Length: 424
RNA sequence: GGAGAGAUGGCAGAGUGGUCGAAUGCGACGGUUUCGAAAACCGUUGUAUCUGCAAAGGUACCGGGGGUUCGAAUCCCUCUCUCUCCGCCA
Image (tube, rainbow, N blue to C red; front, side, top):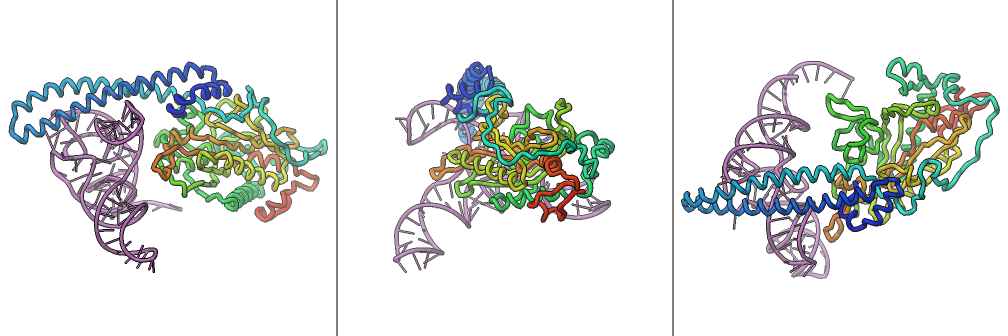
């Protein structure tokens, strides 16, 4: 959620940025925000005045009562009755205005960083770099959904039976590979200075609002209505919400956390031929990295996170590229976002395995996550996160790219974690 | 699941209707003292929002929401959470 004061002071910049994000009603929405905010202030002021008078009279009555002047006290009560009525009306009006304002703000996306390229769709994203050699596979190469059957390591049919589509079972070396990847990612994050977190995988409503999954994207989350809890779509949600309503000091920063969790996404309506196998699941494993940084250096941290993620891909020997998302493709919350894609050689497709974003103050504003400066002023902090990494597509690429006649070769860096060199 | 207790400022902990935004203690910060430190002493020390160049002032907030009252941290209702005991249990 954008700050109203920021909008007010940077109106042109905000509108321009929102248009880059293809938020076409930017001008209208901003005008309305400012108008609502003016009305809010005006009403608040009227209410405050009314309440101030009431408080004043109440004090006077208190004094009169002490002195035993009951009649005079009774007289004062008439005026209070009037004031109470007007306060009530003003209060209701204020609540209504505030509600409209918040609702409107919820519909306005974050302003993109100036380096975000113009563009409408994923085709307009800018390839920043491409690393690694593209494997050349024989004609007989299989896509991962065939490989997992051949070696009996991941079972979708069992998942269908026990839970439903998109909830596969990992078996034997398939299960061990999962565990190896998680441990590898966590160890590397720890080496890079991230404190490991084991977070709850269900969150409450407040947390959903805090990081922006609510109110708009509730359809993406599984909802346990009995207890009004949501299964997390990413560890970003519980980890970032650790800092909801928190005021930090410069010495606490930057904060670096890494957490492994399963992630749950309903993915309503997004199924099709291009999401076969491991390409899209309802439940998957992911190690997430989160940083909380000072506004003046958050973009350095963003680069740092991007570099960390890339180092994982290089060590796994996967060919990858880094995209800078264009205005039209970048997410609602993000100011800047890089996507990391690995090449899955049998599908001959680039698969998104990580997304690293700087949200600037967009989440912090909802979270009320602030920094207390030496002069006691409070400013909103910047939040960042990235996948490091999401497992299924990494697994898909490893399986496809490393397939040989004698089996699937495990990348050497993982062998200490898996305990085996081949899936055969 | 049953019974009971509770939720107050960074922490501890008073406060049961009228200068209570809230005693006191601890912590933190600044100062005096000291070669330096400790101790002692003095002072400062919540958040949000509005008016204002500022100084200053208004309003709201004692778990959340609602109510009673001229006036509520204090009374009533309700929700949430925490703790203790019993039951069940990885």
